[in-house]
Image 1 (cartoon, rainbow, N blue to C red):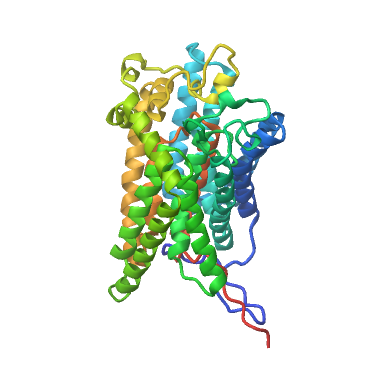
Image 2: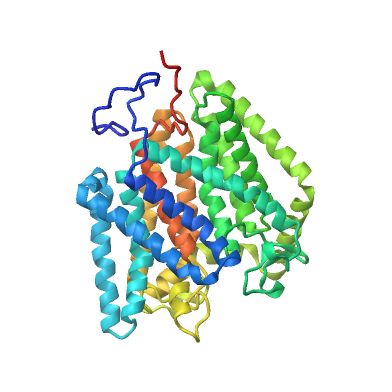
Length: 456
């Protein structure tokens, strides 16, 4: 069966509705996927402004939803749709479980840390694959549009936080004070949005970037859909410029440049003038935002200058991708225990600090897993190379740069996000993986519902 083929015969269209051959209602898997997404985005807001005691119940709820999606896909046999992914993933999962048990027997880990490690190393990877295998096209469209809509929600909140004092209620947690608020420069906060920490906000913007650009480039029918796409793009620019985060700003600039290049590069020859025009419009809108938000741009510039005076950027970049200088000397062949470097594990140890093993994702993987960690890094590189081949092929076939944009975000996610250490990044990686795989089932990237015609 060809990529993107329909798996069942379409039902007849209802009177007054243009026949599309696509599912038009959300499936159970789609609703659970969206529920996980909403919990990830708004859990931090509940922790900051309602009650911090609700954090663990909300995390437990989304973990149960992730397990339910996996169980449903396995029970219904839908995982066979991605046999080329699930078979290697099953073999890898067996290796991870066996290695974690060996660490526990050797005294390097404990039952609780072992379970935490299984959660961080496996759960949301399986969730992303299972969701992609069981969601229909209506689920896919709804999830992508919801991500863009949440960016619109974050935009006014980012403005309010940026122009509020660090000690303002909107910028601090219920049990926190002004001293605990991260600032870009003196008096200007690093925006957190609905998230409890700056990294969650920056990570979500990176995950949303290709979806925002995908909606912007998608076929639109009517003014409302065009307005939605432009508002989403404007909200993304606003959130990035107001973030005060180097990661968010650099990633946004990189993804924007990639969108402009791929929009023209992969367009059909007859469509290249229109694609070039769309790219120029995006450039003009970006320049307008930079001009009108010049104060935020100056804050970001000062943030870069201050950071450059305190650290070498190339050293920071190398540490992010290959780990801190002390990692290779401190790692052992068996590792310190899968899950030992996560914030969930350190929260259970009163004497530990957040990310006690390492700050970088690569460092945590190597220190937690030992030889298995080296295998994990190699597996990620192999996965990204394979995904690049499929993404290039799909982009060439469909004349769209969207697959390449999602692949680029997957590169950033797998190589830099603290996915085995931080709860939000861990879930966002699963959501991103689901979106990446879904585009191969539904390659048209039609993110808007079909037009409803008047009933006769």
